[in-house]
Amino acid sequence: MNRTQKTAWSLLIETLVFLGFFSVLFYEITVLKKLFITIHWIWALLFFVLVAGFFIFIFKKQSPREVLSDERDILIQTRAMMTAFISAWLLLPAGCLVLRFALGITGAIEIWLLSLIIFFILLITMLVYSVAILAQYGWGGKDGEK
Image (cartoon, rainbow, N blue to C red):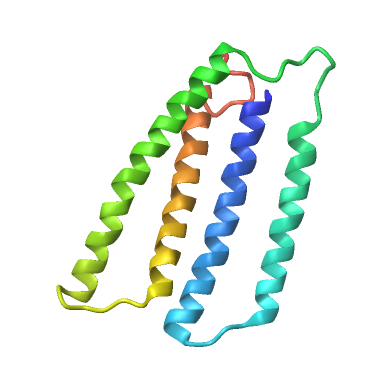
């Protein structure tokens, strides 16, 4: 498994943890109208432990001859970046349409909710990017070999 695949797996797991954390936070703020601080510290600690573990996992070389990236890795990253870019441009209007149908034409939305929506779109775009990389490698740890 090369560095690009390791990075994609770590980004996928970190994004899923982050999405879970912010989904719980969004639910507590909007629906329950309260905030449980102790649970959020546990989530934050879990996230930072994951990030530190993945940095060690990504930057540890398997052998001294291992290269950082080659032409195929650059091509895969370029395609994945284009897929993520297209998904972001599709998700931004979709988020606006969801708000329009949920609140109506004259509905009002709080300002802090807009930044949260854009952050969720960023997380989903990161998820699309990592899945696109892993799909192009074939989801395996064999460097794309069948």
